[in-house]
Length: 283
Image (tube, rainbow, N blue to C red; front, top):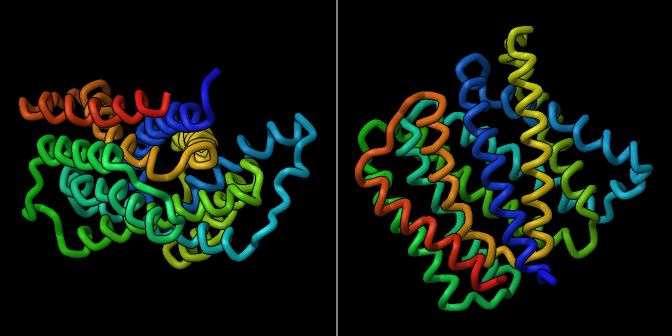
C-alpha cells in the first residue's frame, strides 16, 4: 500500500504536467489580453470544473472555510504570482524567465524550514541542487533579452508561488482539499477581475475553446497540487517542479516544432534524476 508521501509525490508529477499544458495555453492567450485579465480568465474558467463535481456528489458542505485570513493571503499570493509570471512571459524570453522562476523549489525548502520547522535532509537538498544544475545547463541563462521589469516580475512570481505552497501546507491542517482549491480560485478570479477592469479587452468568441481548455487544465492542476502539498511535506515535492522544463521542451517541439538544443540532453538527465530520486526515496 502506498504511503501518503508517495501519493503526494505522484500527485505533484501529475500537477506539473497539467500546469505545463496550461502555461502553454496561457502564453497563447497573453498575446491578446492584459496579465490581470488573463489571470481572471484562468481562475474563473476553472470554477465550474471544481463546483460541478462537488454539487453532483452532494459535497458542497466541504467548501466551508475555517481560516479566512490565510485563504485571503494565499489568494493574494496567487494573484501576484500569476500576473507576474504572465507579464514576464510577454516581456522576456521563456528561457530567461524560467531561469529565474525555477528558483521556486529552493525558496520552498527555505520557507518550509523557517516557517514550518520541516527537517530538510541532505538528500532533499541534494535533489534540489541537482535539478537546479540541470535547469541551468538547459537554459544557459544570461541577462541579455530580459528587461529589468520582466526579471523582477519573474523573481516576485517565484517568491509568491513558494509562499502560496507554504500556506497551502499550513491550511491543509484545518481545511478540506475542496475548500483549498475553490477559495484559491475564487480569490484570484475576483481580485484579478477587479484589477483588470481599467484595461479590459473584450473577449473574442474565437477564444472560447482555448478558455475552456485553460479552465479544465487549471482545475485539474490545482486539485493535484493541493493534494500533493496536503499529503507530503513541501520540501519533499519541491524538486519535482524542475520536470516542468521537460514538459515545456516537449510541448515546444510538438506544437511549435522547436527542437531542443544539444545541451538539453545532459541537463534533462539531471532534472529527471532529481525528480526520480525523490520519488524513489518516498515510495
